Image (cartoon, rainbow, N blue to C red; front, side, top):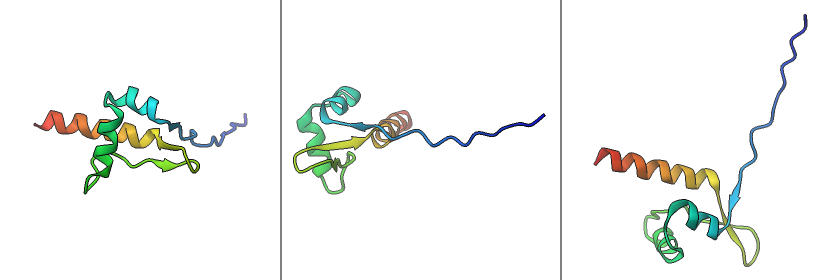
Length: 75
């Protein structure tokens, strides 16, 4: 009996626009922009999609959420 191993590609990264980020993290647009403009940034910086559009990789937002949860649990 032959066993086939399928090589599957890693799941594609999801890109989130600002309304999705706002809904996911529970912060307002102004708070998100203020946090990533601080030095050092306290929120992931967006990546540019086009001249007038930016987005955030979902993995970066998920990582930020996990770090916030971990920090809250250690307090």
